[in-house]
Image (cartoon, rainbow, N blue to C red; front, side, top):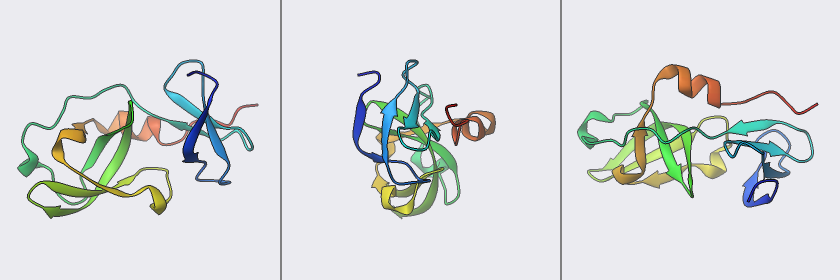
Length: 117
């Protein structure tokens, strides 16, 4: 729900809870105003073999897509990923059904947005 605290997600800058914004894509820290942005749904990966270590991707987490980087291919069906702009506590292992392909402009625009004034 917009304007509601997102239980379990905290700011990578100050560690305080994050809140949804009015547009449904941006999330803001209620304490320091740092923004973290999810992205519109990208095309899903159709060939997991094409995803390698260091690949810039999107990962579905909850009802949102987040820019991430593949840390390593764990096995044939799983990838360890790091969510761009987030602390290592949010790294996780995901299967290809949660991976989407995005271009560099989308990734870099979504990592961090301006603090709320």
